[in-house]
Image (cartoon, rainbow, N blue to C red; front, top):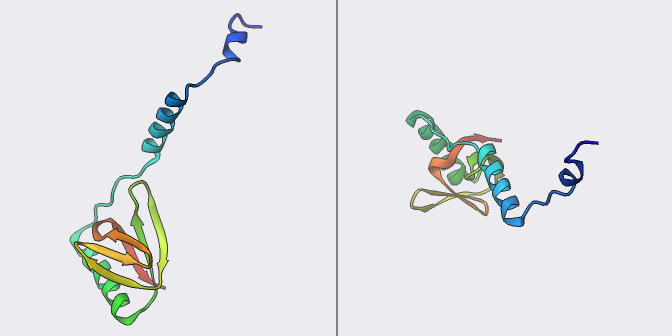
Length: 102
């Protein structure tokens, strides 16, 4: 048995330290926000506008601040200030990385 075995088996993580550890882990696993060329942004906008005007479902991939999320939006609208409404979710257009018709 090692000299430190008893002590090593009784280590406790203080709740504040545990939260810091988890926060650091989430930051390390988080993705960077998307940086798309203007042409790709224009293509996405065309798809979203067509989906909104024709009431067509569209599969949209967006960045939620931590990771990319893919969702099927049955209804798309543009409430203003650069926001896109995807069913019940509001996303700024700069966070959308892909939009395709189903």
